[in-house]
Length: 288
Image: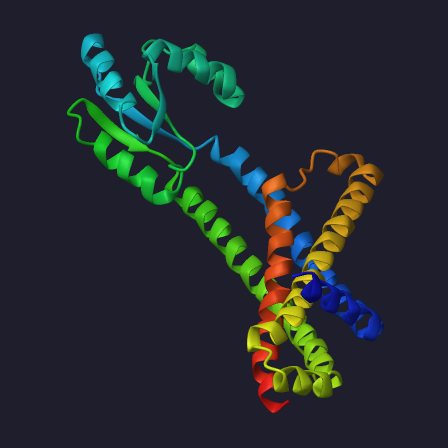
């Protein structure tokens, strides 16, 4: 193991420019992906804030006994998707309308009878605020005989789902594109290292060295390059994030990656370096 590590580190001395190019390419690839990831994380954070407003309003028929509504509220609260159920009486609905609908305040003030029905406001748990889950709960609510109408803003919830899916797809495409560029450059570096050490590898094979013994330093070299590139990319992302948030008060509320995201980024860099090395070494050792 010590010999493998020493040989892997010596490759950085043999080809310093190519090694630096590989590390820098991985770093910039992950940096660009990281910047997009920061945008995605903050958009997701913003979407989660919007998602908290997702609720279903079930309007009840007039004259429905309070006991019936109370029992139904308990049953609805037991739905796996439901977080809270709030009953809004007819009087409370009118009071809200007078407070919130300023332009109709005079009209509501002069009413002789209350035209607004009582309702149940159902909020859903995180993970159950997508269009499919909301529609499923809405259909169940329609099964209660005292429910007159159910509304939940179907169109804007569908748009929210579309935006979330589009964000994930674009992130995947950007990440894949830059990963391919980094893998190609790492593979080229490893190939040149193999060709440079062709005579040494031939001698090692003559004295009985196994393929894995020969491959080991190259694979470790790729993994180390990926590790360095990942760490450099995180440093660049952190510096950019700090610069942007400190220079603009409007962006002070932005959030940075969680530790699990940073670890995943470094692991992805190592995987890129190791994968590129495996492919390149497997292809070019056959020609040596």
